[in-house]
Image 1: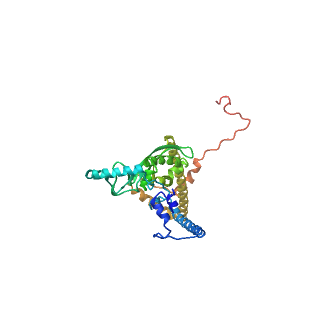
Image 2 (image 1 turned 120 degrees about the horizontal axis):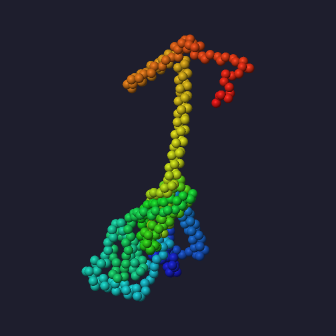
Length: 368
């Protein structure tokens, strides 16, 4: 047990206590087991733990795209710190002097050593450069003068604009894309200890991820599948920033700008497509109207009175518009006797037949 306590795997006190307690029990018990039995029991425990982890993985995999999958709480099983390492003589001496200074200047040091963080903030304390516990807050906490330093972390959602990125798409079209990213701190300890500047790192990673995702898509996909691109970018950013304690909540593609020449070409293509569609629709309408007129003519030809009724309906529609000129159609049957009478008079007389040996009245030379 002493060797286990000195092992570097158990850097935190919580990990040490969890390793000493048997699974499924909250009380410490001492059990004497033979080496063979102990090895067999460890194998069974490892098998049960493996099955349990596999079941948890199957439950978590469908929630990869959901940011709430990482809100269960921080896991520090692989996070190694030096907060539980023994202090040296000089460190004990400096700590004692700091406590002594606090006691001597007690009325004044109270206003210096007691700090307050808001509901949306957390404080990370470093004592002599070492991490002192986890995140503190909200509320009041105490620091020792001269040896304690603390850093505040804001847990509210932060929004920033990704600068416009000009890049080539998969089909070699130059586009300019900009986006908006919403993120927040899910683990203040990781955000302070594991990365120097989590805000700047997230901004640079967002710009790089946007270029990588847009460069693998065609122009049509970028213009029509913005939501899919935003989800892919969010998942990539959230997976990359998880070790920093940053959770990307939402990503939105703001605008996709095209060159002027490309805009004109796309506008001409769309106009030509609309014109072709309009001509097809007009042709279909003419076809349907011709079929309807043919059916109407068949109906009118089967009944002589139908034409007269149609004529009266047309006159009523013309007179409703207050026109001064009315055109009366004249049936051709009324003109048939007159045409038969005057038809011979309208015919031209036949040309006389000339003999073949008779010369023409005009010579060919006189004809120009």
